[in-house]
Image (cartoon, rainbow, N blue to C red; front, top):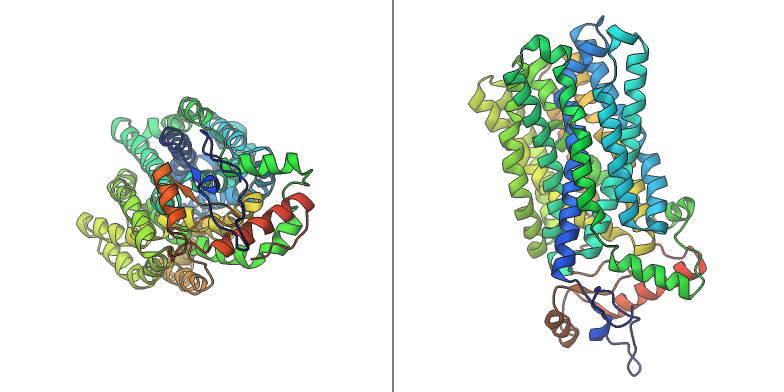
Length: 505
C-alpha cells in the first residue's frame, strides 16, 4: 500500500531481510474528521433508507384495505405483507448489479444513487392512486415501486457496511460499524413515530382517505437532506489503493459474479445463514409486529405502532454497546449469545405479548429485542470481513440480499401465514427459533475478525502513534499474523492484476 499520506491511504508493503516486516508506512491512519463525515453520511443515509421501508410496515394494515378492498382482513394482510416481501425479490439483482458497480466505480457514487432511487420510489407510493381510482392497476404499480425500492436497497446495506468497515480502525470496527444499524433501527422508529403522530392527530377516515400518504411523501425532502450528507463523504482508502493498483499494473478489475461465487461460495453461505437468523428476528420485531399486534392480538392500529416505538429507540441505543463488546470479546462470542438468545427467548417473548396487556406486551417486545441487538450489532463488521477489497461490495451484495430475499422480506409473510394456517398466535416464535439454530451452526464456520485487519488489506489505526506502536509490537500481537497479512495482500494483488480466480479463503 505506499507511505501513509494525509488522506489515510497506505503504501506498498516493504520487505526487510529474508522475512517481510510491517513498517509504519504500511499502516493506514484514518483522519478523525474524515471518519466523522463518513459516519454521518452513511448513518443518515441508512436511516433514510430504513425509514422508507419501516413506514410501509407500519401502514401495512391500511395499505391492504386501500389496494385490496374486496378481500377479507386476512387476505388484505397477506396481500400487504406479500407486497412487502416482493421488495426483497429485487434485492439480489440490486446487490449484484450495484455491487459490481461499487467495486468498479467506487462505493460513494453508488451509495448516492441508491439513496436517490429509494427516496423517489417511496414518494411515488405516496401519490399512487388506490384501487378505488384505477382498479387493478393500483396493486400492480405498487408492486413495481416496491421492486424499485428493493433494487436500491440491494446496494444500500452492502455498500454502507463495506464503506464503514473499510474506513474504521481495526480495534474499533465493531463499535463504529454497529452505528450503521443504529441508523437502521432509528429509521424504523422514525417511521413508527411519524405514522403514530398522524394516527393520534388525524381522524380514522382522513387517515385512510389521504393521511396515510403523508409519511411516504415526506421521503423526498428527507432524502434530499440525507443526500447532502452522503455527498460529502470521501472514497475509502482501501478502494482508492485498489484503483491505483489497477491503473499502475493494467489490472482486469474486480471479479465477475460467476468468479466471485466460485471463489467465495463458503463465505457466501455462512453470510446468508447469519443474515437469515438475524433478520428473521429483526423483521419480526419491526415490520411484522404492527400487523401481529393489531390483527392477531387485537390492539388498535395506533397502539400497534406506538408499542414498538420505545423498544426500537432503546434497542438502537444498545446496539453500539454490543458492537463495542464484540471488539473486546470477539464477534463469534457475541453472535453465539445472540443465536442462543433467539432460541431461548423467542417463546417467552411471544407468550408475554399474548398475555394481552400493555406492560406484558412491552416486556415481550423488549425480550425479543435482546437477540436482535446482539445479532445486528455484529453483522456490519463481521460480514464484510469475509471478502477482500476487490470483491467486498459484490460479495456482500450477493450474500446479504439473497438472504434478504429468501428469509428477511418473507419473514412477516411467513409468520402471518403460520398464524392463519395453525390458528396459533405462538407460531411466529418457532420460525425465529429455527433460523437461530441455523445461525448458531454457521458461526462455527465464521472466522474471527475482531481487532484484525480486513482480508487482503493492511492494518488501519486512528493515530500515527498507534501505527508506531503496532509496528513495534508486531511480533507479540495475537491479533496480527504478519506472514498471513502479506500473503493475503499479495494474493489479492495477483487476483486484481491478472483476473485469476485463486482467491478462495
